[in-house]
Length: 322
Ligand code: ACO
Image (cartoon, rainbow, N blue to C red; front, side, top):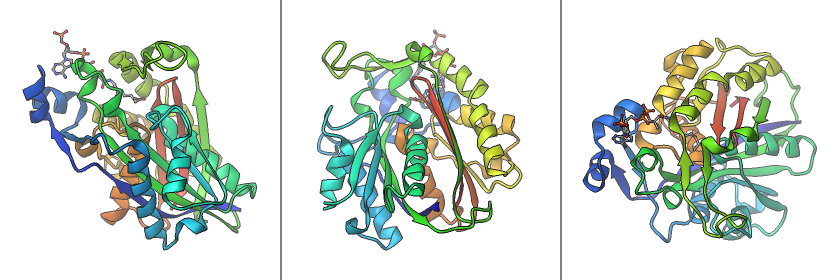
């Protein structure tokens, strides 16, 4: 069995906050933000637009794209670090919003690497026959956990959601066949202090705010994350030259371009949405996939690499024949 991507969709809150808007509220500038990160604007959720609301919109769009309905889905995974509540999981709330009453749903928490983790997990469950068709969603409202008094972090993030539908199909299992060809996940909890939220039920009892040592994250992202990419290429029997599209987590333009250069991936194969969306954590890859599908770049049969690093640290990569 192979897990084939049969649809994708996304959803962004209507409210757009530009760098100029931010510079009216704090000591920052469009020039500083663009030069350091490539970000020009981000979408910010209203109080009603919770993570499950954004996620359900993206999931519906992905189902429409696949020509399917909720009744066709027996697995829902939502990658998020900004759930509506500590429990129940956001995935179960999206399941209910879509009217899905069979199968199972759960959240996956690997911060910005969450979507890659969720794709790898769904792929395993589909290939073992535990489920037949999965909605894999990345949905976040980081605007609720950033410290709006801290200009070194708050300018970086945005809200949004993206989703894909994955389906178990028979295939010969060659690298030319559609589906997830290989994935590789890693984590190393010793890096906690570099990127974390300073709250939660086991600490302050409040939700807390995001804290980050930006330079340390940058160094790790460019220096160490390439291991999973090399492994995913080797496991799938593919190379950077064969790749049609590189769709990395959208944290920062400089991280993305430095990584692509190091890996020998041509700049024109890199899908960039960080300028429009900011860093939407687990939502950034499915948002970028959907943008590149809708504008005609990603086509059926293309070889696509997704890759991300997040708090923990967690990181991973997957090679998909679209
Ligand atoms: N506007 C204007 N000036 C600012 C701002 C701002 N928003 N933020 C910081 N500055 C100032 C600093 O105070 C500092 O001033 P000083 O020199 O007078 O002290 C100066 O700009 C330089 O600050 P640095 O922190 O050294 O800036 P740096 O070049 O390292 O860039 C950045 C900061 C953009 C955060 C960078 O380190 C980076 O991109 N890191 C990676 C972060 C990232 O992508 N994280 C997401 C990871 S994914 C996840 O899991 C969430």
